[in-house]
Image (cartoon, rainbow, N blue to C red; front, side, top):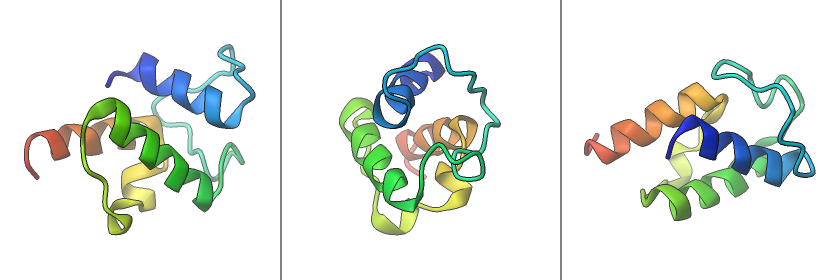
Length: 82
């Protein structure tokens, strides 16, 4: 999964498909009101499907899921076996 794919997923799930919405790696999805905690669960489910990683409930934290940068770093760690 790369930043472009993740951006598309976030736009699809939370922004009515508005792919022009300005998101960068540091945009806090919760603080900006893009999604809420239930939205993070939905996002995690989609990431599992697309990235082929397992995300446990306890992994759905601000540290791992609050921004695209955090999500991509988490996916990289998970793929590396961490």
